[in-house]
Image 1: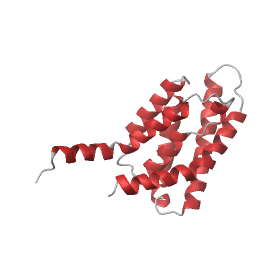
Image 2: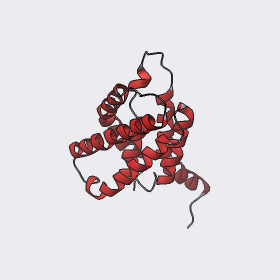
Image 3: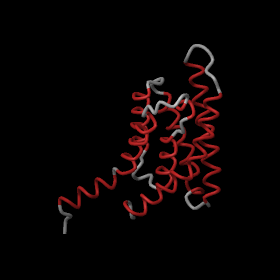
Length: 170
């Protein structure tokens, strides 16, 4: 028996959930909140989302989706076009190499792994901006962004677990 129209729509909506959540997080991170210097320390919510969904549901967060999300972030944020896609694709390759070990690891091990990978990704992003832009960019915003990204990872991870359990069974 083939699924009904509404069952197919439901399946497509569930499959698009990680991409949609990541897109909403990009928009959320770019909302101007009128707090001085918040943009310089805003955590990389897309990095958190890509880490979680690429680790636990790589079927729903393929590399092409990560690339599209990264290009969207570059376009919306006005940063150098291509830097974030390069960083996130590098991040996904590094994560996929460790996926087998991390998928069954404890939360503490995941958090440590995320801390290392995200710090390396943000440092590499700073290096690329240093090479591509004139002048020397300040390293302190990258340091603070790395720390805030690591600090909020548990909350977003918990939220993604709830979403995965309730919407993405299987």
